[in-house]
Image 1 (cartoon, helix red, strand yellow):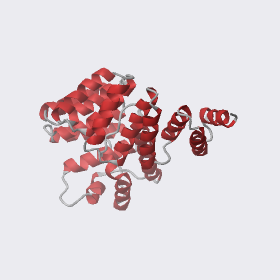
Image 2 (cartoon, rainbow, N blue to C red):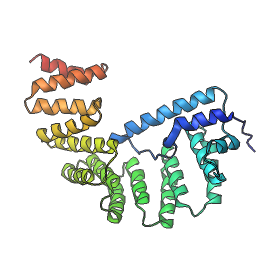
Image 3 (cartoon, one colour):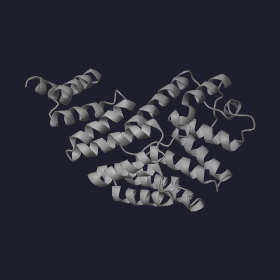
Image 4 (cartoon, helix red, strand yellow):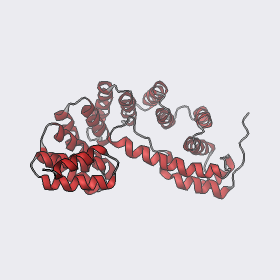
Length: 295
């Protein structure tokens, strides 16, 4: 039996506060547009959590319970502790807490969803698929499960199968913005530019309210336009993306290229200069800037 050292209650409260809602946020799968941001947020949380461990702090049930709302039961404690263990890279203990949680709530589909995303983050694709499928059997009309299954297939590079899963989610809710956005990304990976643009259009007309989601919708649609040499449309979409995140390196570089191709070398130089300022080590961007300046 593993003995878990105690932690001061104040410290566990601080640790939970640092991680915040990210404890339950499902990350995205492979290195697509949105994953870079998700990975950065995850790494930030990991660093903060590791600082706590460096102070010889560990996680115990009593301290977690003291940090949760009054009346929190053991299920909430286990869910919180599993997330904390994952954030500090203690994966065996995290998995053990998920397993115990399932013995208490075997018919709770959200536990399968949470553990499925845990397995995804560990790149245990078969285990993730099994949990998402189990959740779908319990709650067959909820879009979260076919969406999650699609994310696993996309992470494995199986984009056609991912699209099939997203199709199922969209049949359940034709305005499911995240499934439309994910399906568009899968089509981008298959170089189905026109189909991807249709999904990005639909996603932007749906309840896609989060600024980050809208950013990636504009960025992806702009990339589709760039790939089909629709320079004006590409610039317009990158403008929209940069209005949400003005330091988005890819959007700046891609807009520079689109501006160059549509004959606005002056604007292209401005964007390349801006990109070099953000990332001086990017050799390709420096080369493009030097080439345009030499004309």
